[in-house]
Image (cartoon, rainbow, N blue to C red; front, side, top):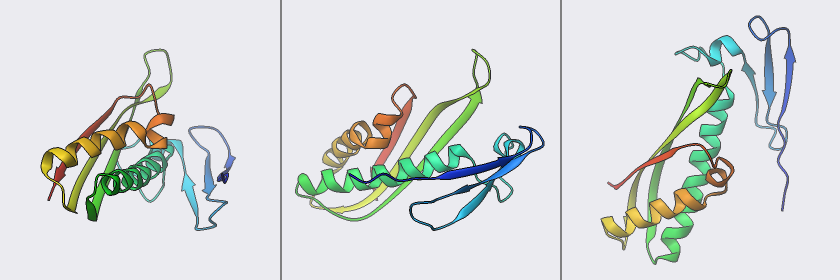
Length: 145
């Protein structure tokens, strides 16, 4: 199986420094990162580890759900998945990812609401990113359009 790589170059202190994260394997871009923007309500054009985790989780989940729907005999026409990743203070010190809220809306042929909910829940449990994030509370809001 392939290995995917990202690289971050950081300069300076946590509060005053900044860096760039490069999506090295795909070469699709380099994005600015900074702790003050990471901890702020507005991202201000700067990404964060949490946003990158949200991107990884939403895309992985969509792929896994489409696979499971196909295995169930359904035809996914369109799936829209969002992942909200929350950064919170850690009682042990520092910060932690305290939760991830997945939301999926689907246009799917040949499946009812119960079948969709079952596949959606199974995808949450079996997508590789969900597995990697074991120990983080992951919630799911799934419905057909």
